[in-house]
Image (cartoon, rainbow over the protein chains, first blue to last red):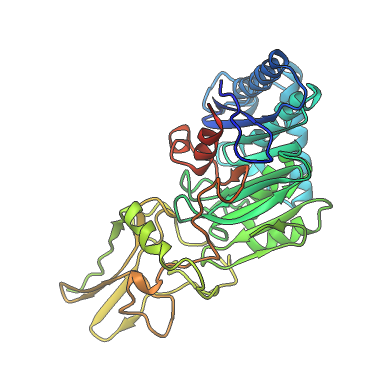
Length: 262
Length: 157
């Protein structure tokens, strides 16, 4: 477990930890405040346990996982962990508010909540940290991140958005109050399909959505990555959520509500 | 018999990033990549779906005895680029990174900003004062090379 080192003058130490789960790496940054060491470590352990629990329940790679059994129709929600029902409800809501651009029921192979589960898991882990008495925390699940509090007095969390095609570069930096999710085709190859055509979508190189909850931001980022400008307009109409789109030709656009630092 | 030949060139990422860094600022925003039809059997990204984008995709320029074709961008940023190969008869007569200007489809060099650019910055993460990086999901292995990993290492003891 990493311990915080002072990253510079005027900034409190951050406790930082990287945890592998769900096929990616979760970065957890804790602003300790007055929390004593043992309680810090306990909070961190509890947050990581939430992530591993989500991994077990929602792994579509594991044929015996609850979500896999649900996808195959072997069991209804009644026979499954409570979390599955929660995520299914989140998926219904996300499909509705995204105007269908996010549709986990349109995935090849059947219902697949993967576009939302990671964000949902981060929300759950962050809630554990919030209840532990920390002054602030940020959890980054492989590029989808949620935070509360402040990394330093009077400052908001600042997040760089990866450049879609320049390794190690940033396309921009934004201030984040709660959650930010980014979806794109550039990391794991084409994995987004357009619900209307079933084809791999090409309207976005990268789509970023900010808002109060990462589960929905995650789903909406997926929606904008699939639907491009049309889906971005839909997100613009959802209270509290904003979107930033980088198109494949290099041009970009955003709804109001995203605070670019640079 | 004339045949169109398609090639994807695996760029050297480090070197390419270095070249791009020289041209990172001041580029006009409205540039287009050649998102032409995909290379049969090889492209991981099919061309954009029906009536997808409002932007016209760059089509290959057909002229006289020479034909040129542009490969789709195989992946963004991690070692694969699209190139346009012009074939005359059986000979390759030109290989370029696809041009951005539709009225000048040949003879653009990489140094001439043939790759679309955003207002992008190659920043040392810590000097930018950022707390995290948001991007498409990376695998555990890719994490090691990511900017987020650099941030985490900076703060870990």
